[in-house]
Image (cartoon, rainbow, N blue to C red):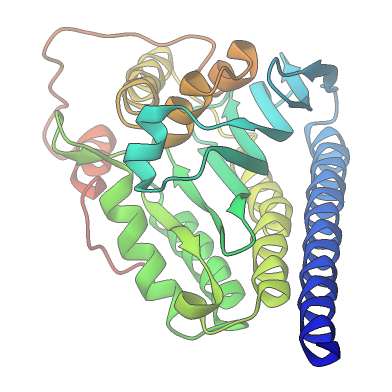
Length: 320
C-alpha cells in the first residue's frame, strides 16, 4: 500500500516538475523573442538615420497579444514591420487537419519581419522565428530568413548565403543545405514558375529528434537566426542605399513587389495561420508593400539587368 502511494506521489511530482519546467521554458522563449525585437528595431533606426518605429500593443480575442512596430517613409525603409506576438487559444478544425493533430489548444510566439526599402537596389528581406506548442509532447520551432532583391546582385546574394550558412554550421553542419532546399521549395510562386527571390533558409517542426539538439539549443539556434538579421541587412543597406536609379528601375521595383504580394496572399502559411486563428489583420498584412504594380504580360529586354534578375529566380542555385 505504501509502495503504491509512493509511486503515485512520485509520478505526480514528476508531472508537476515537467509542467513547471515547460512553463519556464515558454517564458524564456517569449523573453528572448521580445529582446530580439527590441534589438532589431533599435539597430534599424540607427541604420535608416531618419525613420522611427511606431508601436501598437494589441490583445487577441481568444488569448494573448503582441507588439506591432512599423516604420514608414524613412531614409531607406519605405515601409517595414518588426512584429512580436504571443498568442494562445483553441485550434480551429481546419488548422488541426493541416497540422494532423487532435489537440484542442495551442500556444504560439514569434518575431516576424518584412522590410520594403525605397531604393530598388536595396533588397526586400523577410525573417521569422517562432515557437509553437500544443502540449508538453507536441512542440517545435520554425522560421527562417530569405532575401528578395528587386535586382539580383550576385555578390550580395553570396554574402547573404555565406553569412547564414555560418550561423547554421555553428549548430549542425547539415542545417544549411537542408534548410536552403526548404526555402527554395517554399518561397516558390507556382503560378509564375519562379522563386520569390534568392532564397535563404526555411525550417519547420524543428524538434530534438529532427535537429539532433535539445530544446534549449534549438532556442539558441532560433535566436542566432534572429540576431543574424541586423549584420546582414545593415551591410546590404550600406552597400546599396546611395545607388542612383531611374524611373524605369523604380517601375521594375513595383513589378517585383507585386510578385511578393502574390506569394504572401496565396501561399504564405503564416498569413493563412494568422487569418484562420483570428489574428490581428493589420499585423498579419504588414508584410505587403506600400506600392506595387501589375503590368500586363511584361517581358524584360534580353540581356538587361531585369532579364538577368529573372534568370536568377529559380531553385537550386549554389550561392556558396
